[in-house]
Image (tube, rainbow over all chains, first blue to last red; front, side, top):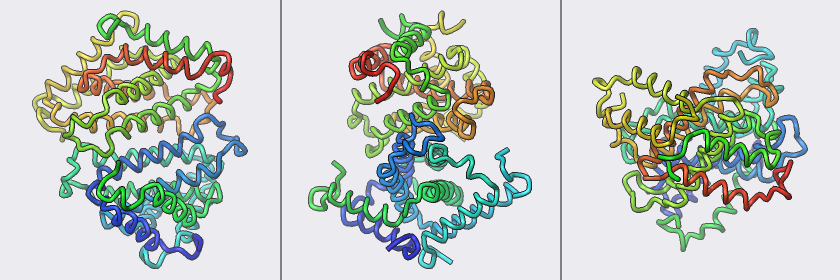
Length: 111
Length: 111
Length: 111
Length: 111
């Protein structure tokens, strides 16, 4: 099982089942879940805080993997709680971004 | 196309292609991407800041959808940049969490 | 010694001295300090994550105190590193906000 | 008026007055304020996102000043809302940190 063979719904169901088994939906208001995402994002960022942006050797890969998983798990929970189809939302946002940042003008630069 | 018919790799490729077309990988160090995730997570959280946790009617669904997409897009970018198989990382983290929070002890409570 | 008898510069000097004694300024680029502020802010927020907004009894006061101190310590470090006079910056920002949110229109509501 | 002539209490009073005039304390639960701090911290961080850590010329000083003020303003609000004496909290935390990171072992390094 890998990213090639796993669809988004399977991961949503995995997370939903975990939450449901523990009767945690009562705590999982969208507001609280948005806080969880931000908190986990900060824990992920902390792993990179004191290493130089160009220092790839210093990256603690295993911990990055775990913290990134935590962020996405809460994103899936929020998608579950609010009925968002993530793949559609992402496709639409990438299209919006593609219009906002036309290739010709933004190739190789951000501004 | 929906979460049921979309696998993770398809979304990874979509995001990777967007970044590659603009030659933005030079900016996308893992450190910078971790910052991007945290920044987008804060923008998502901002949508819930002044509404009550129980006020579901007040949730701006369309904007939540867009901001959640932004968070996950950068998560996919970081997974691309660091070679993380997200579905495996998530499955393993959910298993770790399941051991850490046994159903019997944590049903209906967090602590 | 209290907030009434302590000026901002004294706290800036306290923090600056701590950093200087450890020769940590080499790590304290403004970029890294902005990350530190965000990371500490998330740790502060984590203390409130699963408590209800109206539940004042559930607030872990001692830990809030410590984490809030951490956030402000890094804010003072960033002010030191960039030569910002915090009291002037705050006075000016409050004046900007006062114009943006006139009392008559915003009394009792945010929007 | 500057950081040398301004004590913490004066800034706390300035912020408290701003909030009180608008009757905003009803929105300012400690939980919500902790979210505000994290959101403003992310806006501050966003100013540094795409610039290199060593690029001091690229720093948008005026905006850094404003966003840093926003972070500290909400920190002062949280201190007001929870009755925290910030100067004492900071002095105590710096002492804790000084024990945790003895000068001899940590001079010039973080770990």
